[in-house]
Length: 133
Image 1 (cartoon, rainbow, N blue to C red):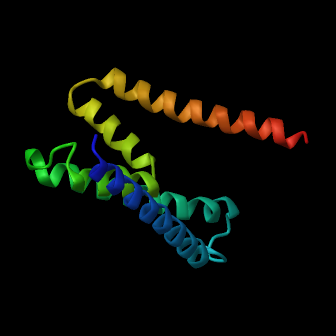
Image 2: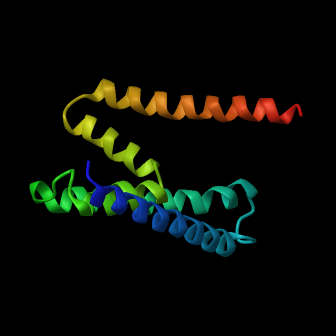
């Protein structure tokens, strides 16, 4: 860790968060009224952001091969900062893919199950607390 990378994460995170807000709003406006299922409208912007961030992180990691070090300023700016601000799902996707790539099939499926189910459980718990208020 160094100050340059810390600043890169800070700047990238802010830009990624702004991009997520813009993309999500744009996609939601485009999809409003075009879907008969209202649930699709609320997830389409998030899903688009998650897919774009996963694509960007995968391109960053896999297109550079061994040329891109995990502690480089570019990884801090784009991989951790921008993609982290744009979507934490991108990191989850790549981590899970790496488990499968390494032959750790059980760990990959366990990561999927634990991540999805635990996050849904947390969302349900918070909803349950506030829905009663």
